Length: 479
Image (cartoon, rainbow, N blue to C red; front, side, top):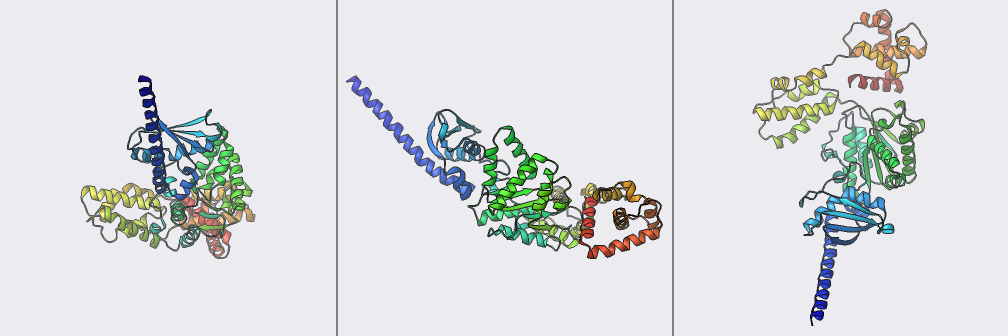
């Protein structure tokens, strides 16, 4: 009798355990759908749908995954999403365990995570391939097309970015955006990713900086995971690499970037690249990479003009009025800032942010006097004087000639044209007199400086290369 009762108890326990397991499987189906809503359909289909739920035992939820790499990637980039949703469903889960299907018994991939029961889902590492870049790739939610102020200096770049963001057939590949610091390159890159996510959630969009690309490449080499690295980068639909000039001079990284670039172009996948100068001006970049960067559409973001800077400030003011209701700003303040801070939009926006915060804290109206008190350091920095020595060094570096040849007596065209460019910049970017400029260029007469200025004025209207050289040098000197 006792033995029969014991057997019935065992069968009863087995039935309860089976019910618990079925209930957990049902919960997993619900959890999967919740995760889909959080990360987007594309990332869900690629990384979550292939997961095979096993069991929850001892606070560990076990899953079967196709490969060890797959398990590592899901653990790193979606582990906390999964934990959070499992806990919400009522499961007592402290960590996850991913086992590759081929070697599940021998090499499980353990994935621990914070044990806080209500930890919010964390974003994956910046640049992780995902069709939900706004939430999963470290993109700034403020950098959208709606918040990008368009003016004459950036209208072509904006139109090209919009075309790529529509997500149709690749019309120009790559799109290369270049310009100085704080002109909007990164804003447009983020805006493209946000728009692609909204229009085509099934697409895998990968945004990262060139520095991140290099570190991922080095890590893959060190950990002997190059196959996984190549597989990940070649599986994207859109690759976006910011500040590509960072990999110049880094031979192994350039080699891998070159092969990644070719593989994606051959597969008709869209590539968007940004840099601080024209591809042809990146001295330590391999020629074959420079050539490929120029084979699509190359678009310049010009330095902002006064009207565009005022427009950017007005747009920011509208946004800040929601945060600081009732805060008054006197007429003429925005025009004063747009005039005094002309080189970098980030600095300009940062100045306005500081101004509103300060005025709110002290309870004062924003006037020109308040601007002078609050932004004295920024205004002093923006008044930095450019010297003739600095111009001469930048010009000689740009044209790859010795400084002694630039200011020396040689009249060869190879030296004469850069010398005229340097004289022109000295006249237009400093307050030095013509005789003084002449003296600084090997004791030349002021009439020589006048001739140089007139000659460059003529050439910049009809010689595209001279115009580009002047623009690039001006940016470098004003940076």
